[in-house]
Image 1 (cartoon, rainbow, N blue to C red):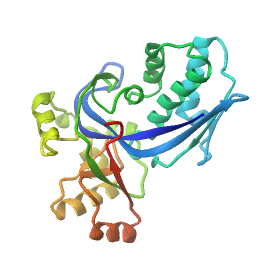
Image 2 (image 1 turned 45 degrees about the horizontal axis):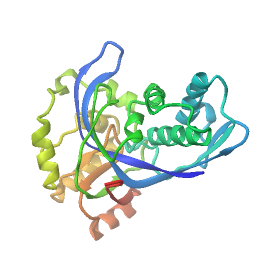
Image 3 (image 1 turned 135 degrees about the vertical axis):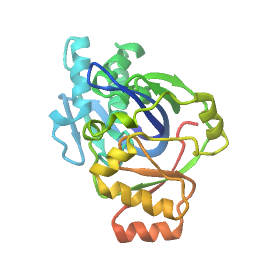
Image 4 (image 1 turned 45 degrees about the vertical axis):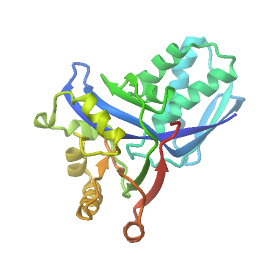
Length: 269
């Protein structure tokens, strides 16, 4: 079994408050895009591996399948291999997508012993973003990001620029200052702008702490904004995106600076 595992961009991300469990309440707009890891699943001795030699015990998919085994009462007899193309520490949700994709694939291979609700519960224990990848192409995420309401958005083209750095979500959230917390945004106003192809009403509260911790992110944002491009950080970084096609000057700049450049489209729309 071979399954595509898509990336996402956070079109906007507002951090509302610190929770008692140590996480934050957020309001975010998730959107799947056409950048993929590939998950291979087959019957065999239980294992999880990748082309990047990520230790199995540190792989989110391994953690998810261990939780799955607790519900099943046994380890599933499956070999999972993940071809990673989505950059690590990018804010594009590769690990979370892998979790959702592997859970669905393994459950299918075993004859669907677990319900969609059970898969969502397992995914949420491993990653706040993972439940999104079990659903449709776009959703509003609230709570830790795992309380989801699917939304309809038009097909869009994005350019993603990824500096040569891996951002840690936990470090970025830890660096978030109280004065950067916000109220919930006007959902209807934001969706209206997005449906017109306008990112102007969007905001990412994690941009400032991410740029403080990882100056390379700030360099990308400053470069794009100096060219008049309305660029945004995805998630906690490190990737930056804008709505529209790449252009020659940017391609040259990325080559000179060692930034990775991706042209992607909405996925599943």
